[in-house]
Image (tube, rainbow, N blue to C red; front, side, top):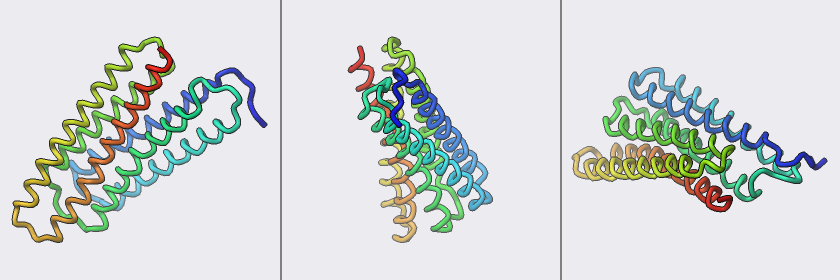
Length: 207
């Protein structure tokens, strides 16, 4: 049955839950890389968070189909929750590859990339939370600008590390393994920028 409750605020709750899961997963990833032990345990914790994020995305889509009036454009809600979910999917891929490839030692640049990801998802959480207060346009846009800066920093670390890898003299299989892992984390950061782009669009449409 369709809900005729004007502009159901539950969507904002789902957005907040989804971004909170993102931050928890990124924190878990940073902690994992700092200690680099119990790989499968950490991988399972992030997988559990990825499932939690999937459930929130499914609940959001279900509410979207049940709601007659929504607080934001229906397409914006769909794009936003899916972009948030993509961040977590790529992070999950990254730690899965670390376990699959039986990585024994962490490259320091990966730790730097993980810190960039953590900063980016914290920015995502702030920007998305403020959608409740769409009138605070400048604050929201500033959060989005900071996310873009983090994405730029992620690109810099990623490209510099790739350049080093290809010149490192490591065996080609090791290079391929590390490229896959770096790709996953860099894509996760890119998806934070996708979230920022959606948020910016929402703000501009409702200004």
